[in-house]
Length: 351
Ligand SMILES: [Mn+2]
Image 1 (tube, rainbow, N blue to C red):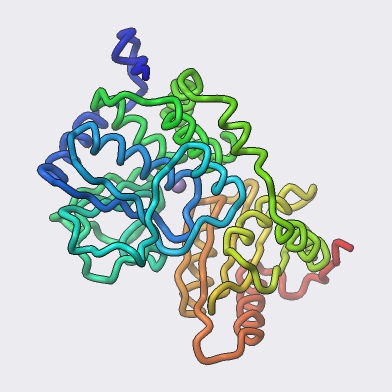
Image 2 (tube, rainbow, N blue to C red):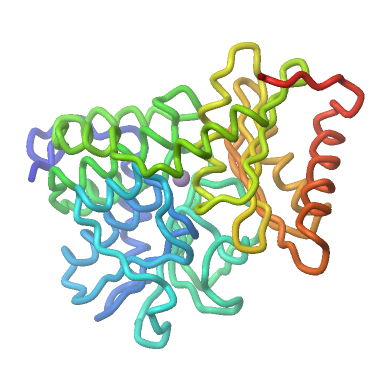
């Protein structure tokens, strides 16, 4: 339970003054409240889980009686399930919540009406804290803190906790550290000095044994089946790699395999797709380009889905409505090749 900056009077991370102002504005949009619903994107990743967990701590610190973390979908990736278990992050499936039971709604690591949160359109959202690039206008009545240049929403939340003087427990520090670590890809993807400063601060507070348990989780057999299938279907076209996973039991596998196969030497791009619950999910990774989010959005626009993301990490989903799923996959692959300009480059199977 250390708040290092407060305690030792050390220099604050860059940008802390603006964080204090933003925190005060956030507070005035949320308090007074008895109950707050904290929503992450569907199939949550460590950054949004940690951010929601941090906001829950902050609201409890401000004497909000009930702060509930909820999302559509479920937690699929083994590491993320281990994170929830090891850090005791309480969550409630969105289908079991009633919006009217809550005084305020906070959205973390996502933006309204982007197709990846469970809230019905026109739901009043009182605060949005995010780091995804977004073209849409913010609703003037609500609180928005969207910092596109930040590597993780967990960094913004860490600054809030420090600015508020809210104690950061070892478990919360572990969550936020892991959120920053995964979203910045261990600092190999976009990040700002604030990400590194918060990373260092959290490193001294967190529980390293718990982090080790999260990063080395037990895996179910399905993981190895998916890995096998991915190795079999992967092909490359010069510096572009693609794998199609077929039906998956959780869309998290699509992101996970995109990350893993992206490490194949000579690849600049890696795209992975898979089918889950009447949707084709896809993930795009880039090593040096800044166009992953743009391409994810273009694919979604052309095929009637939703998509977007950061410069090197992006994702989307396309609904399978009237057409057969194979047809949607074929359209997806055709559009992908066109946008990457690889339609005429011969494909080479990995195996
Ligand atoms: Mn994030």
